[in-house]
Length: 110
Image 1 (cartoon, rainbow, N blue to C red):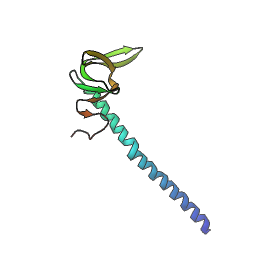
Image 2 (tube, one colour):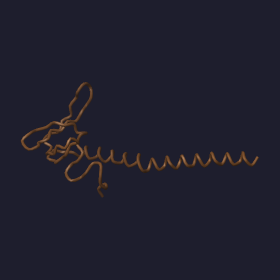
Image 3 (tube, rainbow, N blue to C red):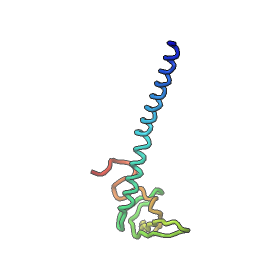
């Protein structure tokens, strides 16, 4: 009788440990990445002509034009950048930094 009660307690401890690991995973990995994704989306919606931006490929330039393009039934937003003497067209989602505000790192604005 005493052994049966002890084995049931071990299962409870295991379930509590797994729940604790799940909470740590959520608060250290899932929640921060979701917040960063939300900040990046907000950053892209506030994009306007004249903003200085950096793309994920490392191009730095000033926004010249923003167009919504319909390609094969999908709507994409394309941004034309002036980089020195060249004009480059990139997808809006490829922009990682606008001005001095970083999209992924740094504290949120107050």
